[in-house]
Amino acid sequence: MPLVGDTGIEGRWRIVSLLKNGQEAIDSSGVPIEIEFVNGRQFMTQGGMLLDDSGYVIDPGTTPNSIDIIHNAGGGKTATTQGIYEVNGDETRLCMGSQQSRPKEFASTSEYNVTVLKRITSK
Image: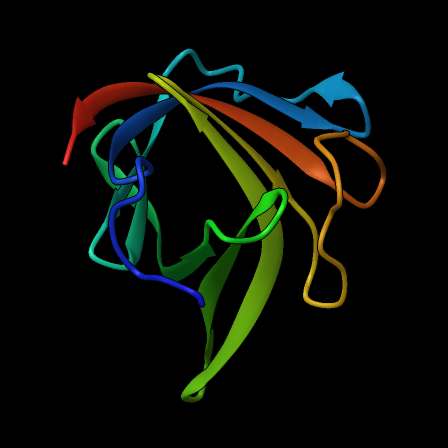
């Protein structure tokens, strides 16, 4: 059953790697991007500026664990990006797909991006 809440993912994280099409695509500005997962909300910031405020729902009962990021699409509509995640201590890997396709493994392709996060703080 999908969950909103803490199963190890809640807290503040810093993006340390972002692979798109198998190539590193992390922001070259040198200003780290942080993501906070708290109470079903995902806040992405860079240098104190809010880049994204979305909802999320996780299902740790799937193999691999699934995560859906629910974006505000305007006009009261939402768009859901499907993905998978893995928490290993102070490191989390996300592989995000699209609205139509959930990845089955942690592989960066033309369709899927892999992000590695390092924990800054717990919830």
